[in-house]
Image 1 (cartoon, helix red, strand yellow):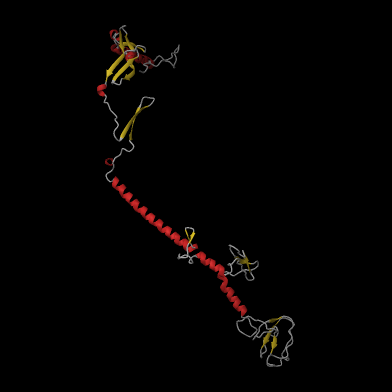
Image 2 (cartoon, rainbow, N blue to C red):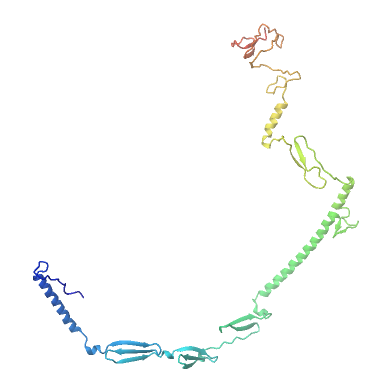
Length: 359
């Protein structure tokens, strides 16, 4: 509900702030009318005193007795007893199915529920033994176990025994095969032993045995006898550039060959180049042969055709060519570097040493 009038703080004398005019007077008149209407409405809707006396004034509750007390304005009271003292605080049930309930005030009530309880009996059979145990909280546990040796053929899967018999027969077959293999292995062992050292099961064979002189040990002994006791030491020598370690071997060991210090062997990928170099060097000659390396003879000379070279220093005087031609008139001495030209025609190079074979 909103206020009906806004208060005006009047001045004690005529003031333009609080004028006594129609606006302020009408505002007060309107507020009085609103209040009057509210008073009339409240009087119309108010409750009668006789009705109010019939309304509830208070409600109290006693926690000890469980008693509610209702009080009206006219003083009348009304109580409701919840009988909480009669609520059971403990239960128990006898083996016969009788439940006993005890309330907080010591009153007991019983109820026979045996007709609602079914009895179950756990009985041992010829194959099952039943055990019932009770823990510290009174909980019971039922355990069933199969009796040892109590399972008969009728309790098994129909094909179980047939499958077992099939496996047994197969096992017998495997055992027979294994026995035959063992016998064969034993026989092979005797043969191997006979061929190896002329014994069988550690006993030397007799002269009638096919292994008497037909075994590795016999022939080893024969070879040693022929060799005068056999080889007792094996050594190795190597050419220059190689070295050997582990030599000699008197019992067992390994002979290792390696390069001596400062020597090397060409690799496989360079072998062709090494072979070509060897062939060219080995084919050197002092004869005038094309595409051959020059090799001086025992006097330090060699044969050649045209020689083109630069002369540095002074050349020894020549009096004749290889054919006996006199070349004295055509010889020029050059103490400086010059070309040597052997030709019947004078060269254009005036600084060249010209040898005319026909002069």
